Image (cartoon, rainbow, N blue to C red; front, side, top):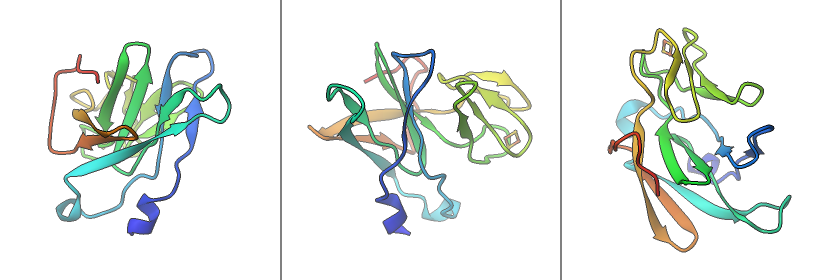
Length: 144
Ligand code: FES
């Protein structure tokens, strides 16, 4: 289980949103009671650019980075909790269970989701690592 957490995740640069990067990863399957308290993100270098730092992604959250900073979103749909996925063609998060769609900021674009994706506190734990606190919730404007 933890080996999967160590798999390097796919990094995507969104077409048409050159400044915005969304990092996707494995959608965690741990039972709710076994969920860790945090999710760490390794800072990595983008091999396609001049070495600009990017953020790695783990099981339970996404980190979105844009010109204003970075923020983390819990990957759980606010309808009934299914893990939401990122659709690169539309640059949205979507829920496979009942079709809710969210913007990259986590805002609901299409229901039945009643609320935006939960924005998590993101802290820098070292020069090369960020941590999303899974039990936290911060203001939708929060950025690191
Ligand atoms: S659980 Fe996501 S739309 Fe129902």
